[in-house]
Length: 172
Ligand SMILES: [Zn+2]
Image 1: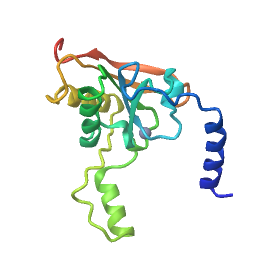
Image 2: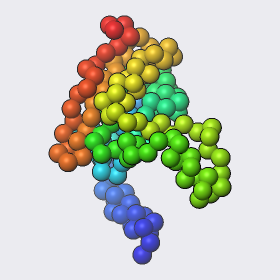
Image 3: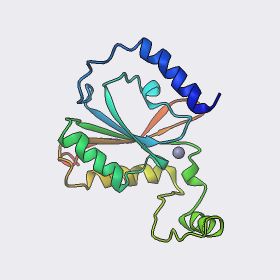
Image 4: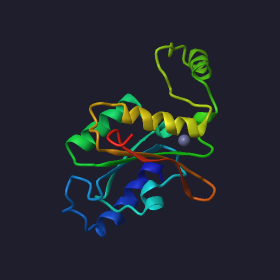
C-alpha cells in the first residue's frame, strides 16, 4: 500500500467519526500560530487546540516570510485573530545550511540558478524568533493592537519556552 493509500484509508476512519462539520470559519480562540513544517511538531496537540480554534501557518523554519505575513493580514483583518505566536524549535534544519550552500547544491544537482531565492535559514535560534516577531510588529497592515509573542519548542521535551513575551505595537 502506498503512503497515499494509507492516508486516504485513515481519512475514511476520521470522517466516520467526524462531528465538527458546523464549525465557523473564524478561529474561536482568535489566535494564529506561525511554526516550522518540521514533522516532529504537532502544534494543535502540543498547545491544546481543537478544530476551529486557531490558524496554523507553517513553512520551513516557521519564518515570518512574505507569504506568512500575507496569511497573517488575512487572519487578523478578515477573520478576527488578535494574537500571533511565532514558534521556532530546537534542532531546526534551518540552522544547518546557508543560502549559498543550498544555491550551490541546486546549481550542481539541478543546474538551476537560485540566486534570487532567500531560503531564510538562520544561525541563531533565539535571534530568528526575535527577528520574526519584530517583522510582524513592523507590518503596518497588521493592526496596532495585535499581540505578538515568540517561543522555542524543544523537540526532546515537547516544552515551549517563551523568548519574546506578548507585545503589540500599541504597547511597545
Ligand atoms: Zn524546523
